[in-house]
Image 1 (cartoon, rainbow, N blue to C red):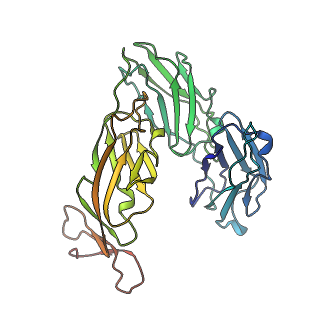
Image 2: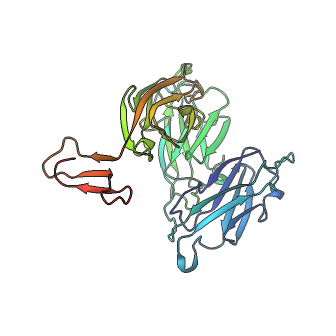
Image 3: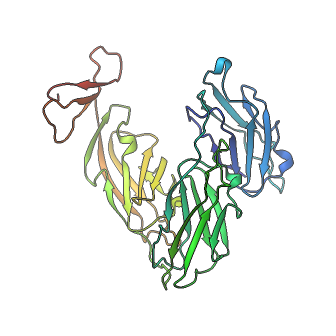
Length: 360
């Protein structure tokens, strides 16, 4: 047994003061072992601990805003002990803990639907395609269920929510009907991690074709370009940390994009984000070294019909460390400003500043 997902995530800052804490496990847990002695915050924080069996999620609901004396922002450490056990009596192999920092303001904005697959009014949808709904912010996993997600005509399937990617996935257990218009509804019963809910249901339609999707996706438009050289501040990896990207020929199952399927020099990418509107991935390596950067996307990446990439995709580029980077508009007009990163003449470390006049 292991922790699959935790919210707020490790290192998050400016977390809303009214957030709840969520821990999702890889298998069903014995509810009696999830309590204030096995799941708690430090500094000590009063609240209630519950377990939702449908989503395999433990929830800590603070009884007061997560702020320090005088309403100051505060850093909290969450601990889940080995006292938590699965239904078959298996304990967590080791204590699980992480930290995040709050801001003194509450979250009062309800979650919204960011993107849909299949898309609104899409036609000739393959009969074996799954449905994915992308949200604007993380949801309370315990509110994602058959009561808040509906598909009509009714289809037997498996519903799951991935908090790290903010995506709900419905996988049909059988082919969808040929030439049929389906209506998908996400009700106002879903809430975000602060308990905010939409004021209205969200609904859209798509129409199936007459065939299954049996072909895997292809990847293209790689960045940095194959064989190119990019510059980054010495030892900082910036701006390299946010530039690994690729596009796909069709919708991708966002839950298959992670550090096990996207790697740089054999190391898992620290953060992989999927843009369903552009059908692109953006990866952020956790560390980097000067020289050749070999990127691999494995056949673990699948489309929404479950077809994998036909073969592993790879490309490489060179990373060059420099002491200063100057970024100017292109094309540059008279009077435009440039930004410089690094190169502090006072020796005080890296800085970002404006340069007027010619780039240098």
